[in-house]
Length: 437
Image (cartoon, rainbow, N blue to C red):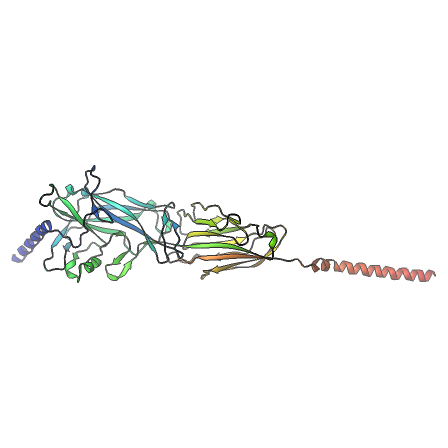
């Protein structure tokens, strides 16, 4: 009985210490920026807000700026778990308290979703670059029952009943749930009456938080899974490991043209067909397309469209090329050209000159007369969830000479027959003349 009384007394004392001192070691202070708590618009009834981050990590082997995928994330916030134990410091005088289930009326979302569209751009690198948008949670201190630590649970889902993969996004190693502790205190001497929100902490897991058991406060935060939002975060189960955020992997393509032994048609723009195929992505993708020289190549801007089977039709002259930037990894590409020169035939060869990867195939040599298509260059789909490899493809057309002996050989049998006939007639005529003489 005495033991139970001592425990109850300890909890009461701890709660009083929370009000007087505050659990500040793990809590993020108020300043209104970068995932912190801050003043809201004074015209509203709410006087605090929390900003958390949502990240898509974008990859491209050339570090190119790419158009974003179409994806919407929906969010909900609800009361969390009561009774979780929080110890705020590594010192012997650390404060311990239990969480309370946060009242639903105390929090609201300024917007319940975050969207990226094809009109957005992403900054990339070969190793991945974080691109973030923010979610604002408004906090009303008057809705809390008193000082303490209030826990909430925040959940993330993909909108429209879609999967991340259908949008071209790879699911990261982080979870789709976050836990928010909001720290509330009574006013200090000289402050206006009413409860004050003085900090918050966002965690990956719905756990007890024990800073005292860690070597340092930073170690305690890592083991507790402290995070700035739905972003790449240290793994609380293994602090040497990082849990990745959602990712968007892309690569680039360059298609060029070379003409050999045909100085008369160097300005001619040969028609190409470049087809992108991806059986997983159902949402529109907007590739960035460009030409090296508008006088020697054409390519209409590739509008946002389904990439399940997207065909483009550039034209390219000798020495020119076209480029496609931001192709989602997991997309296969087929490329061929057609001879549109009525006065010439060519031997066409298509080669992947840079970045050739497993499963890719060059276009074998083929004689293409007018209106005849070459063989295909095939770029394999590859893995959708790994860094891509950019390719450079060159189609080389070598002028096919017509041998001067071709016509002679074609009529030679008839010439021989004519000569033989004329000879026979001459012999017959001479014989007849001799007989008449």
